[in-house]
Image (cartoon, rainbow, N blue to C red; front, side, top):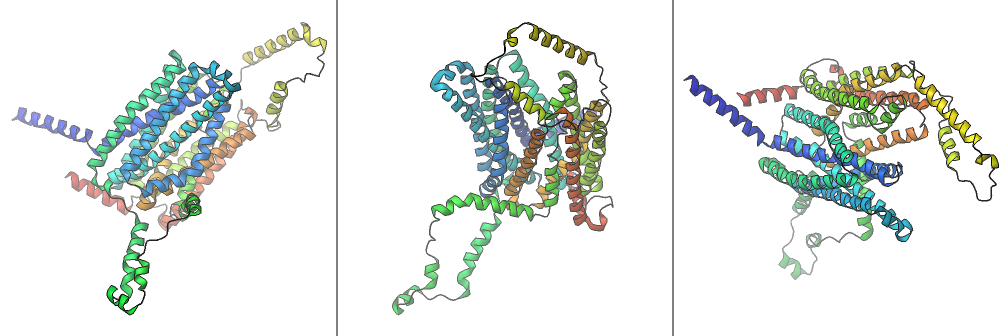
Length: 574
């Protein structure tokens, strides 16, 4: 009897594991992991490739970043509208193929440029090489737009349908998706970085192109399997079209039309027959204006959403230098942190990000979804106080007397070529001046190396940034689920497209802020501005929560819908 029970228990365990591995939820996770891994490898590698191509200059990388941000800002609503108006499987497969094919083409072009750069530079005075740069940035931008469409349709629509009506299951799936994002953010760049370091840029391009080719085929199959296992994905509500069709069907019922024979005999024209005639085709001007109308309607609809303030609060969190991007990393280098220390800090930030996803699921279960956003915002702001304190601690380079344009102006003056008509002083060719300059440089380097700057300021800064990611990712998941639950199915695409545009707009503003104050001496001011924007974002969310919950704002406990979901889940398990 005992052996039979053990055998049946093992069979039950293996059966449940097999059911999970073949479920739509797990297949969705697997497809997202493959897609995110490829995205992170490509985003990391393309910036490095562009720097390598342009002689260790950041010009092409800056142009690429500007084009990507501007494209999503303008095209976000249009992409979302396309997602809404087409079948789910068609949208997912089309965006998947366009994204991966674009990356593969970019990789092939980059390989050709790396192998034949000198030949291309001499052809037509370098215009062929310039055309290759333009082509690379354009195709890479198309890949990013397709990636945006994929993220909208999978993370904002498919996941809601797969979760069904169970809000707890939806929260768990959202948290798992974010954990996958956190892990791939660290592991994927490390993997492709090792390949590029021990190989070459050409090998890196070939590896990424091959990866995307294989990944595209696997993801295409996984999407098809998820679609098969979830019949609800085949049903897509298009409320506006259905209402328009119902109006057309109900219109002839108002009056009793005459028969066709009677109208011909009487010599009268039937108004109903005129209504049934095919409508005129839209003019060329109307078709050209359609994207602008879609853009306008998307932003108006976004403004009228009940979760508008919550979405704006999330967008304001993108206006910050307190993240592990190139700006904060560059500042850390100026403060003496090594690459190995930064890699450890990035790993710690990934761990705290995963902790934020765990905190989200626990808080939502105990306090409800809306209150989870409040506690997450409070936790993030509390940790960012360390960043504010770091600005005024020993070791901080804050010096507002330094002009933000002084460094740019001095670099420009140093790089300015000497006119041909200018007579160069003879003293510039003597050995005395260069030797004296060299001795000054050596003395300066010696002073910097022997000077023991306290690390209190930068330590507090990164401690606050890393700890704040718990609240940040919990808040991000809260707003994501609010958008999933409160936006009608027929508008999920366009509303989330506009949300992506808002995120990119604030992200673009934060880069402009850094351009206006690029010196390390002004970084402390940027920290204070960033914390102010984060605080304004959470104030917007507080106003949303106040309007939603009213007097029950600070009454902890799960929402009624969440209690119902838990009871349904327990009943189904029993």
